[in-house]
Image (tube, rainbow, N blue to C red; front, side, top):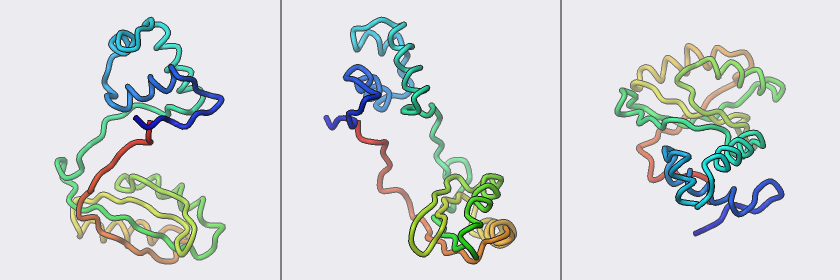
Length: 156
């Protein structure tokens, strides 16, 4: 099993807790305690410590976009008119529900976003009526996803 990078913020027990939660995010803390042969309160304490240190950033449900009506997924690069617009553009992109990821990147684009849309017509509206209207957006370049070959978490 690959292991999470060792650092001063984690020890063997933290890495085992992270590994077990990565395998099954729905495992109860009491079951986790049994598997690791430690107390339930120690699991709670360690997970809280991992959250407070920023190593664990949250727990969530992963949705299948196609199953809930979002047929189109794109990865879209955004060219800014000037570099100074990057932060304000990112703030405005947060307000668009269909923009589900936003990254600052190097190269031709200043920002790279993931958009999920009901269909191609809705994607066109999101791009032209919302994203291109944000001050500082110069142009966009979209790459359509035909599906995910795989997705995984960080190696633990």
